Length: 90
Image (cartoon, rainbow, N blue to C red):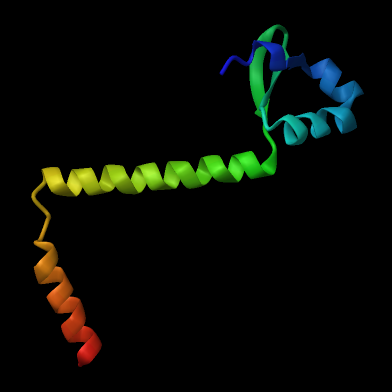
């Protein structure tokens, strides 16, 4: 995804804040805010932000699982299921 069409200077944000807030929500695309010609911030709608955070959380869980596998911290699924069933039935 290219963000070059979604770049606005901070002066535009200051002058058109209400309009600028509508854009990311309507287009579901982030808006890059520049200051003195440099990218300084990204404005994103809340739904997209939440999706991104959920995706990052899932990726972190996968990474932690891979670390456990590499470190040998694994048990056979049958053993784990038997232990869970024993706890449930106790």
